[in-house]
Image 1 (cartoon, rainbow, N blue to C red):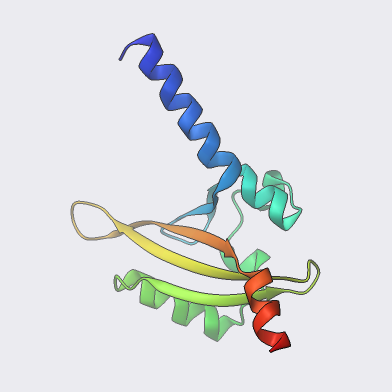
Image 2: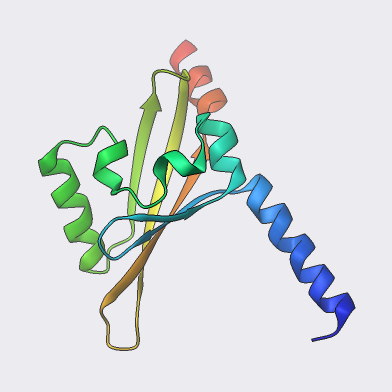
Length: 125
């Protein structure tokens, strides 16, 4: 790859890192990466969540957590709506399972969408 193409790719990845709220989990629900956008939106430090299990930092009950991860292991894309009360923010979560060449769960990608404004507008009406 040329120097110019490498620079372009780095720039694109930087834009994604700073604008898209995305988390990557391993097959055991451990945080393996998160974007700067997540860190900024949730007011957290990456070091506070990386290598921790999803359940350790979420407010999901054991039952909700099991249901969510069972769906993901079965190949379902899971959409959830969530309210972060400490931020007064509403989000839409989309969990997408990624499988290896043997159809075994390899990782899960979670993308957050800030839906605060539209949710508050709907609540007013």
